[in-house]
Image (cartoon, rainbow, N blue to C red; front, side, top):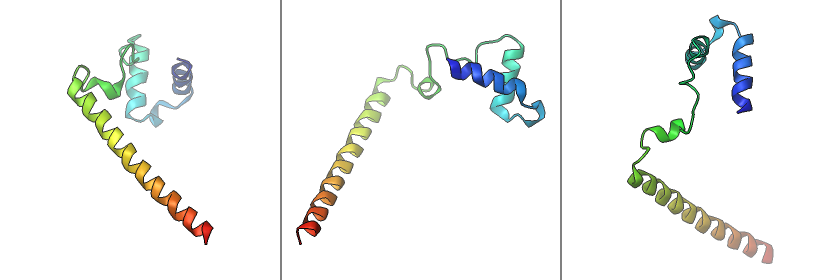
Amino acid sequence: MWNYVFYKAYLNFKEKTEFNGYESYVHDKIEKNDISWFPIKRAKAMLDGEDDEKDTTGIIVGILNEFKELTIKVEKLFFKVKSILAD
C-alpha cells in the first residue's frame, strides 16, 4: 500500500513531460479521481487467465519440472565437488 503512496508522490514531483506511458496513464487517472488503475483484489499477471484452472495447473507443473531439473543439476555438481575434494 505504501508503495502506491510513494508512487503518487513520485509522480507529483516528476515533470509531466518526462512521464513514460504507464506514468502518464496513472497520473491521468489520479487527476480524475479514478482508482481503476489501483489493483483492488486483482493482479495484472493473473488478469488474463483469472479462472482458468488448467493454465494455473500447467504453470505449477512447469515450475515443479524446472525445480526437479535444477535439483538433479545441483546433486551432480555436489558429487563432482565432493570427488574433487576427495582427490
